[in-house]
Structures are given as C-alpha cells and as structure tokens.
Image 1 (tube, rainbow, N blue to C red):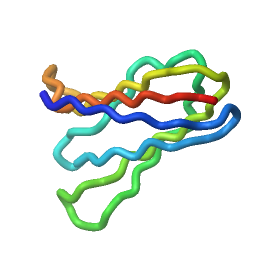
Image 2 (image 1 turned 90 degrees about the horizontal axis):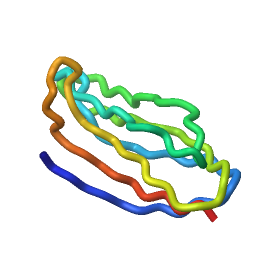
Image 3 (image 1 turned 180 degrees about the vertical axis):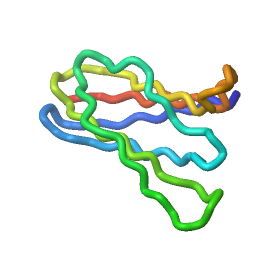
Image 4 (image 1 turned 45 degrees about the vertical axis):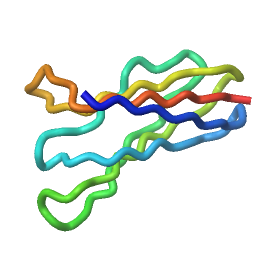
Length: 95
C-alpha cells in the first residue's frame, strides 16, 4: 500500500478543499475517515472527464470551525475489496 502525507494551514472560519485523483470507472475511489471535531465536512464533488477510464478529481470541501491541529485520513479502494490501495493523511493547522 502506498502512503503519502501533506500539510496545509488555514484560518479559523475558512472553507478549504482537498483534491484527490481517482479512477471511479475502475471502482476505485477515495473514502474519508472519521472527521476531526474542529472541522466540518461540507461536500464532495467530482470533476468528471469525458473519456472512459480517465482520472477524475474528487474534491472534498471542509470548514475550519476551531483553531488547532487536525488530521484528515483518506483511503483509496474499491468498495467490494478489503485491500486499501493508497492512504493519504493531510495535516491541517487551523490558526
């Protein structure tokens, strides 16, 4: 399994997005883990491309409610498989 991480900084009261590449036509998409208390989940959108089998951007939008350090965890997998193909942790510092 491939593991990656990154860090971002946002202001309290701000909306922010996380964009992850997926291939939903293969059945593999990103799933968000448990949401930390200081953040609110707003929505998930997909920027769909026209060709079959091409990558899609999954765009997750959040609201930074409270100052602090939080970690968003995402897993890339197919719903019918137990195997996690990728894991991405995003550290969010809310000022």
